Length: 70
Image (cartoon, rainbow, N blue to C red; front, side, top):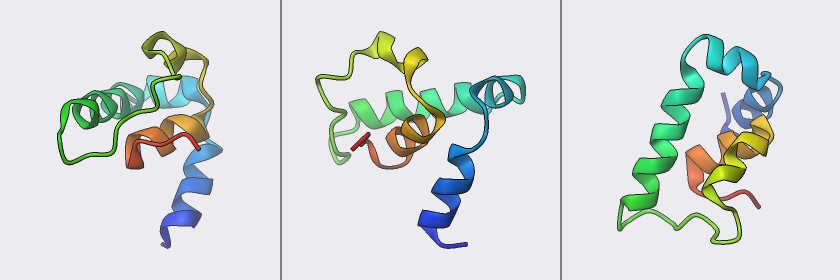
């Protein structure tokens, strides 16, 4: 499956479902790991850590996969 299609598909999954099956926590750990990894692209500074709860699934997935919400 092409990356863009996978991202679109994942963006349709409700956050509650991701949390229910334990995937949300794994995605958040990926974000945390990427944030401390020197070779990763930095998370946008204007996006506070407590804002994660307010992010859409699409933004969470994008943030987890490539460190960007743009």
